[in-house]
Length: 437
Ligand SMILES: Cc1ncc(COP(=O)(O)O)c(C=O)c1O
Image (cartoon, helix red, strand yellow):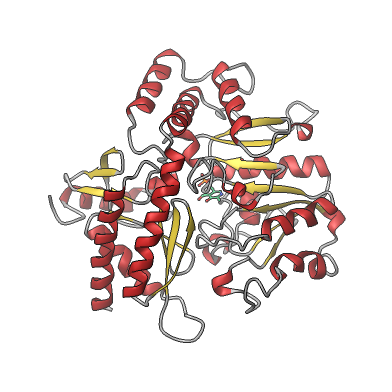
């Protein structure tokens, strides 16, 4: 054990700083191996991973069945281009996805390699079908950083700065963020003004609804702060979309694959999307993504959309193994149960530390928002950052989200004693951060 980062990690961090493009580093942690909810770094330190590789490792690090599936497939055939030829693995995975995604309608699937790529595929499919130029999304949403996805991403100015013009046709409306309601209203007396405004103001002024191909939203805003919309918001938006023939895209890249205690988080809202995007946890640690959509939306022209690596065989084997484990071991039920425990423990900490202004989430997609004293609970970004640093110094890996929140997204196989251990470390980290502030 060494202080984190130890000498080996420090060397790797220094080299990385020389060689690698600036991206989104959160902490100087260099992992060497992983098992379940635990990471061992290059200096032999063990850390509790409550970031899951940014929401990827649903069944934990190096689950033996996923490892075996990958090894076996890599030894048989890794790539043959599933878009140009035929893969049984893709068919099996597509079949499974049509079964576990919401809605009993006929569906089709297209495989990609990342979340952003799934959003690109969804936006293109919507535009091609509707022949309309506009897509509407939410201020604060995150959909990826490629140009089409970035058109709809608006969670932080640094993501968009210097990149205009985007692909065009992207509009945003204020988010259903009750803790910081953009209209200073309160649910339920607000009568879901944040949904109605789409029809009553935007469609009456800036956005002609007949020009809108799609509305895209995360079932709960991830990168934007784990913002859970109030009950009825999704249904209200979907019904406005249906009135105008607008396709509804649920971006489940972060929230899907069991993370919130249901296969897909949109199920909490009782809405069936026309197009669903998924990635991250789908690949069990390998790059894999997909869109699942109403069969009648399929392209009638070959080549309108395709790719080379989408649904790669090795990643497909990892996906099938991951889904098999999620089903057989009741992992999604565990996510629900451990999520409740985690939220309850975080609420205990909230009693102790008024700097935790809000605890929110669904299943194991949970965040705590740090606030300064004062009217309208101003976000305390510096405190959040200090708590995150004090946490990893003590062996707990966390990621930020929103302006001043920390997210808690352990692998879905996490156990109660591991949640309790994380809370203990967090408690000490908050104490230290407040002391050093
Ligand atoms: C909701 C959502 N959509 C899309 C993306 C982009 O995914 P990727 O980083 O795999 O491109 C993310 C990534 O965090 C996400 O959370």
